Length: 130
Length: 292
Image (cartoon, rainbow over all chains, first blue to last red):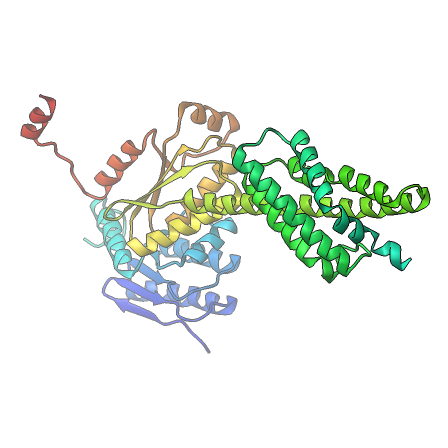
């Protein structure tokens, strides 16, 4: 069965979506990701969607719910590399994903994740590594 | 009927000079006062037009202006109307170029046909029909030129009014000027997002000093643009909110609380610089020099 690989990089999990997302794949990703966060005790998730050229409302909502699930498991999510056309589509669909952090590319996304995690540590958020 | 078919051509050939003089007089009385150069131009155009009409009438006396024989006449009128539209003439001034030809032409017809009232009536009717269709052609061509000008200007306005300016490394500004509608917002959004990708910017400031009216629709467009920029990973704020606009926004019940808003572009720029980690320090020595 087709799966989207989830790579572990230190504290973070890296997901690069290279294929066209369909609903089944999105649900599999959700399940895999939550499993992996718990398994690796990760505190950051970076989702690169720079190769994604088409989105629908389901995929948009899925990205939002992945972020919410990750937060429940004490991991920050950053969505990076969104194409302009995709951003416009999501906004027109009324999905502005207010709960999700975003960055222009993987590099900047990493900086955002680090900043978010160090802030969480300073504030002594429960679960943050000491 | 074969003879009467070409009556018009005959009359035009025989009385060309007389018709031209009468026509020019009529034009002079109906048009506004023309300068010497304009007068010369009108005379030249009138004579050329008579010649083309004469040639067309000789080739095809039926007076069907859509037939191939009349192509030179149609082309002449299209060029003529386009020139008049660009020259700032009104549509009635352009159309009266054709219609003022009626009187001298009818007079020539009358002197040619003589007392045969039946032929005269028939010929006059044919000539009227012909001139009317030519007049309509002129008006249509005139309007078409004007519409072309308008659509070109609209396009240019769209291009001109949505620049994206880079204020600093990683900071973009989008000074909006003029009314925002759905079509323009699309262009604005697209331009901004493309510029964010191109310049790898982290911050964008939308300045609405030049937007005359902000209603719920415009506010919604602005919010959409801010949300789209945020999805691309850039922080977006709105500046240049005039007191009047602030009052309108609140009276309309538009919620802009999720967006950072500033009164001036300078305020927004200062905040972005701070956020981006820059510090601005004024040199004491230079400051004293500037004040003295």
